[in-house]
Image (cartoon, rainbow, N blue to C red):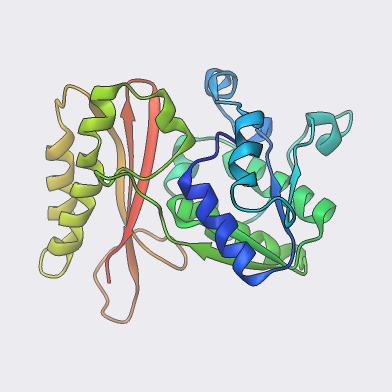
Length: 254
C-alpha cells in the first residue's frame, strides 16, 4: 500500500532474483479498512516510493499505481469469501470485513497484472494464509511465496505505520519482538495459557503500549492452540497499540 521501506524492498529483491519483470502495485485499498481515520491517515508517498524502487532496477520494475475507479469501477464493493475459518481468527476478530477487502483487492490485482508469482511478507502472516486460500478458491494461476520479516535494529517489524510513531515509541517498541522471542523460549517447556498470562503482564499498565491480542495458533489453519501436539507447527501472533498506531508481529515457535 505504499510508504515503501526495506521490508518491501526485500520482497522486490526476492522477485527480481527469480523473474525477468517485477510489477509493484501501490494502492491504498479502501475496502480493507474498518476505521475511516486509519484510511485517511495512511501514509501516501508515491514519488518517494518510485525513487526507492529505482535504486533496485530502472528496467525490470513496473509500478502499477491505480486509482480507486481503475480497480473498482463505479461501485467500490468488496466480494465475500469463505476462507475456511481463517478470516475469523485474530485480525478478523478486531477488523470487521478486513479480509474480504484483502481478498477482493488481491484478486483484482492478480486479474489485472496476471503474474506467474507473487511475493508477500510474513509480517502479515494471517494475510499470507488468506491470499493462499483465495488463490485456491478462485483457481487463479499464480504461485504465492512468503518472505521473511524485515526488522529495525531493535527488532520492531518494519511497517509503513512505523513512520507515525514518536521517537520514544520507536525506541521502546523493541519490547514487542523481545516478548515474542521469550515466548518462543517458554513454549518449549511451559503451558500456552501460562505464556499468554505472562505476555499480558508485560503490557499491563505500560505507559506507551496497549496489548490488543496475543494468540498462539497452528500455522496452517490459524486455529488457537488447545493442547500442544508435537506433530503440529505453531506460531505466536501479537497486536499492540502505540497511541493510535496499531503494530502487529508474529514468530514461528517450532
